[in-house]
Amino acid sequence: MSPTAFSAIERAFGPEAIGAPVTVRGWVLRSRSSGGILFITLRDRTGIVQVTGRKDALGEVPFTAAEHVQNEGAIAVEGTVAEDRRAPGGREIRASRIVVIDAGAPYPIFQEQTEEFRLDKRHLVIRSQDHVATFRVKAELLRTLREFMDRESVLEVTPPILSGNAAEGGAEAFEIDYFGRPGYLSQTAQLYLEALLVPHERVYALTPSFRAEKMRTPRHLTEYLHLEGEFAWTDLDGLLSFIERMIEYVCRAIAERRPTELRQLGRAPEDLAAVRAPFERVPYAAAIEELQKKGFAIEWGADFGTAEERALTIERTAPIFLTRFPRELKAFYMLRTPGDPRTVEAADLLAPEGYGEIVGASCRETNVPDLLERLAQLGIDPAAYEWYLDLRRHGNIDHAGFGLGVERVLRWMLRREHIRDTTPFPRTPSRHTP
Ligand code: 4AD
Ligand code: MG
Image (cartoon, rainbow, N blue to C red):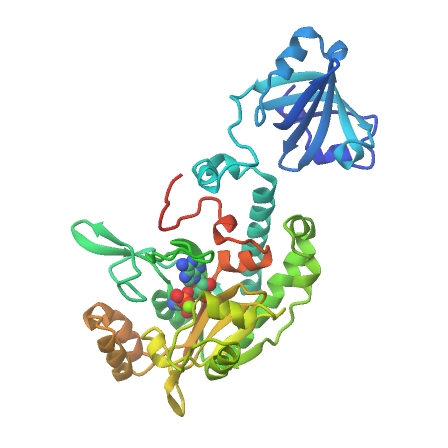
């Protein structure tokens, strides 16, 4: 069997496959042997097929060798495609030859194991069909996000991940020893995107962000993929309209391109295809009233956590923007609302069905004294932000941007209970291995 002679398993399901010879290779999902016939479910990247091998066709010794292959062992199969109503997809490969590539050790993963054990064995668990489907949709999401940016003439740039600044404030940054000086893992690329705004006007980055938050919730990771965009000459309305068009675009594209995976994971593609801009805009003050009516003991000025965002979105089927938050709740760089000094020109996009925040967005403060005032209130040394303030001294213009949590979006799209199931090797406060 020369390597070029192998065909993809999906070929066995093609229109002219019945009766044709095929040679495939892959991993054994499961197998059983009864009455001198071996039934193997074989998987490659393109599909799953049943292989049957009769002892009289394969010969005693090769049959026994194939019988001893464990789940997730690797084999190659020569045979003929036949119709079989009982087999998955209605076809099987009747083997004339089975070559054992790696018989494998007994596979340690079963259905009933604890979540902790499965996280210890994550390097193997990610072979499961749900993970396979999830990461295909994730790849599609990354592709369509980049596609949308490209169509909108937003330039992809490459900000650093290591920095001497903790951009969003110190408490939630992972500090590292940078040759004897403090360094930080990036929490956001925003400040660098603001620097790259001139001369490019519209920029984005897709990079990992790190948050040293001891948050044990189903929506927090300590490392996540962050899509961030920054736009010159833009106000809050312009920014929100960009974000809602982007969300509509990716929802529709994924519904069209990955319907099988969506259905497998319990999401009707029609749900995503139905997402349409514009999204409802709910001012923070109105959200407080809505929560009070729902029985929350909450007052103007309080931040929203998982419970509040869940209550605001559980009965909705479309995303909503929460807008104009109290200034004290938000980062130092957000612009004050013209005519309302208590609030900032910011919005969070909340996914429906209880999933909560998936995008954070704001107009950026352009006034140096206001920036210095907020840094002082937060107890941040302005010296570290001198380069950032410099941007306000040379071609200072209105601008705005957003950050989208890729795994947050995927958790909503795929209706995953926990965000860790949207990333192959989740990083959480209690775990950074394997
Ligand atoms: O709201 P955040 O903190 O905003 C920023 O970092 C801005 N500087 C972004 C910008 O304007 N360029 O984070 C943005 C998004 C959130 O809406 C959420 O989707 C995601 O990042 N996110 C997380 N995702 C997973 N785990 C966490 N711990 C996350 N923290 C934020
Ligand atoms: Mg936020």
